[in-house]
Structure formats: structure tokens, C-alpha cells
Image (cartoon, rainbow, N blue to C red; front, side, top):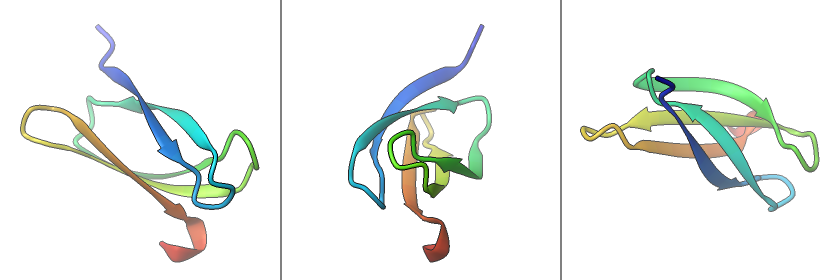
Length: 64
């Protein structure tokens, strides 16, 4: 069984809404992913709440 969800976020550079596929089998994650629209590197932080729901925060890589 795959434990992934699709989460919509707004790129901190270009402001476009993009969808990220998040792996919910890992409780806390921190990684860099390029925006699919402007190709700039976003700092992505994922945390899961007690019910396993993902909270995703994206910021500019240079703000991290």
C-alpha cells in the first residue's frame, strides 16, 4: 500500500499553485524541490499530525 498524498502549495517565488506528492510514511521531512513552473528551488518541510495528516510548508531556499 502506498502512503502518499497530493498537496497543493504556492511557489514562494512565482506564486503559482503546484501539486506536490508527499510520502506520509515518514513523520518529518525536509528537502529541496524545484518549482514545476519557474524551476526555482523550494525548501519543503513536511510534518504529520497525530492522525497522519500532512502539513506542508514551502519557502525560498535562501530563507531556510
